Each structure stands twice: as C-alpha cells, then as structure tokens.
Image (cartoon, rainbow, N blue to C red; front, side):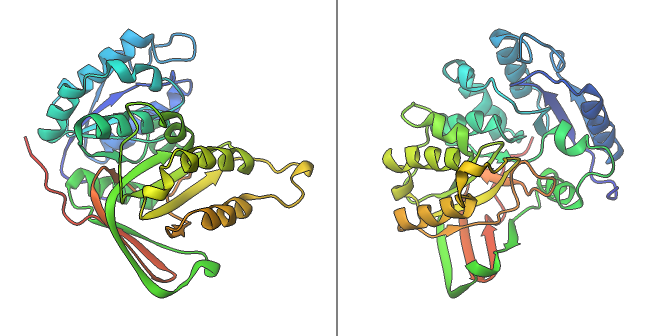
Length: 313
C-alpha cells in the first residue's frame, strides 16, 4: 500500500453497465479509504436494469449527482456499455461547471463516450484512468504504477507520462509533436464517428486501446476512422494495449502487428505503440482534451502536459 495522501473526496458512480462483482467494488472502496480518501457512494451505484446500472433515467440522475457532488474526483465503478445511449441527454453545462470548480471525472472503456462528448460539447478536460472495480478492487495488491498515477492526479501533481517503445520502434531522429490529447477505447471512438459527439480535432494526438477485439475488428474500426477523415487530421496516433483476443487458424499470420504495419502505411502521422493504457493492470492517467507534447527519442517516449491550469474549490 502506498503512503497515505492528502484526504480528498471521491464520488463513486455507475454510468454504464451494472456492477456484477460487488466484492471487487467494495475492496476498491476499502483501498481508497485506506489511502486516506473520503469515498461517497452514489445511491444508484449498485442499481441494475437488464445489463445496465439502472435504466437511462437512473444513470442520468447518477451523472447529475456526480456533477453536483462537489467532490475532488468523480470515479466510475466500471465500464461495459450504456453511455452512448445517454449522450443527447447528458447535463453538459452542469458537468462543465463541476470541472471548472475542480471535480475531475475519471474512468475508461465505455466512459470514452462521456469523455469525448464532454470534450466536443464543452471543451473541458476529463481523465482516462482507473475504474474502482477492475483496478482498485483486484484480489491481491493493485498495480503500483496505476496507484501512483492516480495519486498524482488526485494531488494535482501529474505532469506527464513516459514509456519504453518496443525495440523495433526505436527512433533514430527525435520526434516532437504538440496537440490536443484525445481518444480512448477504439470501439467507442469509432462508434462516435459521424455523430455530434465526435470531437472535431485537427492536429491532435489520438490515443487508442481496446479489449476482446480480434485484430481484424481493430483494423475495421481503424478503417472507419481513416475513411471518415479522422486519422489524417492527427499529428500522431499512440496505441495502448489491445488485450484478451484469441488468434484463430483462419488468420494465417494476420496479427496485431499486421494491423499496425497497415496503419503506418495508410497515414502520414507517426504511429507509436506500447502506451501503458488499456484494460491492463499498469495504466497511467491521461488528460482527455488537454494540450500535450508527445516526444520520442531512441526507445523513450513521453506524453507531457505540464501543470494543467485548474480551478479549485
């Protein structure tokens, strides 16, 4: 366990799928409290309606309460599916106001829909980062890097993130690009294409990850973004982890590397891999909508956002 930190208020809510593993969420709550935080549970945190954490109205009300909570962090219990159907009705003004007053919205996976819609509608920054169940609620110790990055965010200290590129990607010439960081889960980003909630970002740094998607499906979603003109407008594409898929005999050598090679052939922008983000234990926190610098030299890669100007309570 990391040393205790400044006590912060964390508001826990369920905007997407119903929590099935309540034990994991309770473990996560206990760990956040052990780190010294005050954790407030939304009344509908364990609600269920079919596969969702309550019907649409219930989940919208949970998002409204999270925005009105005045908490330092509004953190999701889990992803799954459910946010895309709420996008026309999200309380964007209240969310923007909450962010302006210092509430950081944190999550990943299905939460990508919320993050990009909020960026498109309000220009505000949210955070791609852990969920309570899958990250803080694991059996055994939560990942140290994940916890350290989350604590940096909580403390307002995180100013960037670095990682090692695969050996084959080592750069002879240094790379430096500046732009708005955006993206998240590939399936969700692709599903937003052509909707009002797809951020219209030119010269951005697009980061992508996914889980349980075979490489051919990953390529098909990237093709959608390519043909929609999204990829050609970016200064760089940064790929996180694509996990939990199973090769089949029909692939005949077609694998994730084939998709990355194809992508590099199709876009002029540099494509970097290995970003420590996705449905993996070691994940950093990334500011969706912030201006960042992407730098790479040799095998060292960095995303730097510096000290983001924040409003405080």
